[in-house]
Length: 375
Ligand code: SF4
Image 1 (cartoon, rainbow, N blue to C red):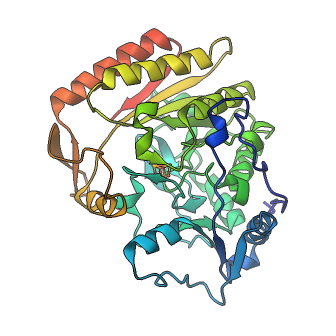
Image 2: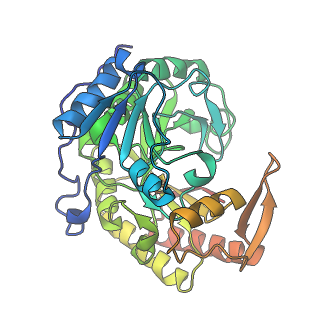
Image 3: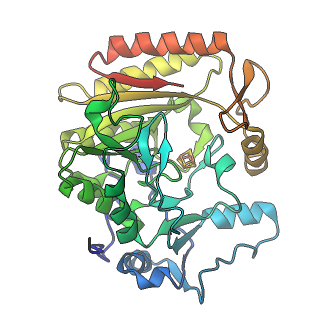
């Protein structure tokens, strides 16, 4: 397909949930600089990202090659802060365009970007992405989109399964980034939604977000083939989610998306079994139920408990030394993944208590919702 990106800023600076009292504090990300690699400049989409950023008054640095200058800041605190304020526009390599399975969410993972500008003190990306946390947006969107049909009808998470086969072949776009956090500059998520809207096949695009700026997505011709989920935690745990949108604004954004005909979902993640968790998660579920009152919705729920690896703990402790997020051995057991690495998850009694609480509470407050998994 052609590269359809327009250069005008997408969505402006207004939050989608502008009517919501908490939305005012939800600002769109404004990086200090955009690095544009040489190869990225050869794609309309890459140039459009740079033009959009430039229209917002952001400095554009055209690099002479495809190498990012990542070793400029030697002080680790400074390196973190500067990286989080940098958007690099690069091309996804052929290996990154080969899709990988992504259980339990979807058949396949499709990446529009890598990295995220927010500052969550439990972020799973800390354990999976190497180096300074620059956000890299992919310019070669036409090549990324062209690869997707090869995977149609393949996969083992939803395709051909008894429980989720009706979802068709599923593609998850929020594994290595939060695509809505950067959408006002990249336009990539809108283009992907449009692609699935035109793709007359048994397919579904999925993405989840901790942001509320849904305005650019509301009028897309999505064809019912996109499920948007919000990733939420109770406001009491918001101190662990720096730089994201207020939870109430995310919920308001979810309602707007449902009204625009999207399939919707809740990703309750990461579930934190801190003292008082029953009360605050119960209130959160009630708040969602109240926000969705009166509109017909196709609603799914995904439940992901907090976990960390030795590697992610080391990186997160360095990035967020003041965080009071519990990463001690209390209530934890070690679990070995199928790749042989270790992760620390809640112990069986804690997991059982969480699982039964969420299943019961969701079935009471959101009786039409379908829980896809608890992990
Ligand atoms: Fe990580 Fe998601 Fe937070 Fe971004 S919003 S920092 S991807 S947990």
